[in-house]
Length: 390
Image 1 (tube, one colour):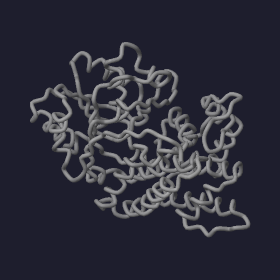
Image 2: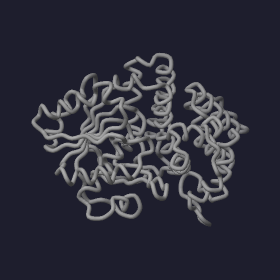
Image 3: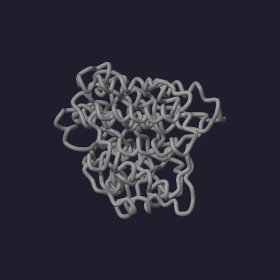
Image 4: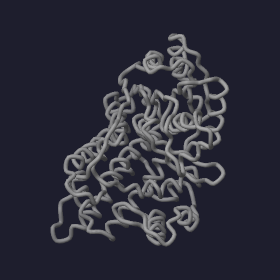
């Protein structure tokens, strides 16, 4: 295991109806002039937005709203939010939604006190400070409610990039699993897929001596296999929703990724896909991750894929041909994704991508990426081709 620092100060407020206490936590963490950021009309129609706004007003705070955040959030909304916050003297942001809304709020929070372009933090700089952010979570998927990360797409260049800084970890996150019960099955399945992918991006490592975090990651994936099937059959199962919601957080606040080098090549490949073709991130991962796994099995010793197949997917170890076991694990993973009605190829995703354009946008050139298996441009092309035909 490698040496590491780990700091995760977010205050979590978990359980039924806890969104009604949002205002109290704004007060606890020093807010007085608040902007609530949200996505579409569902937050309004369900009454959630009103409950959150009323709880903030009940604490005597000034509050305004900014809606309209889309999936695969864009830079334009961030610029709009920064301008409003500066004009209104906002000192606290509340994100009501899932990862897209949270990442938008985090990006606004970085941009308000900064003299330059907030996009600097998605290309070359790390912020020293940001406005405080709180979260009312409505979708278990990204883990942004507990992470120091944000992902935004630049509308001009279609670059989908990440920023990372401890100052954008949410001060508090309100997590009521009941708020996810009304989600369409597709969104729930995308969330479960995203959670599993966050675990596997950490699982595939060349760092030795990481048995504890291996077992934690395997446990979360096993839990998602079980609870994912449960909510597909019974969307109102509160306990299953609760386990999925908490898994989403622990998968991305990095408590299970410390002390080990992580991969993230699948995410990089998918970010190009969703930036250009605007597909749901979880659905894109369902297409890309099995293709990446299939490629890596043939270009490595495949020990970790074999271990995953045996420990998580229940495959029988073929001692004479362990790669066969690893391939069976990938097929078992794909079978689970099919159970969730996730796409496994571009046709099922509803797109016909320009593979050469996507390879170019990954911008490896003559180099090799990091990760469990380093990828050249030719390797990336091959993975995209596998995803087309699997």
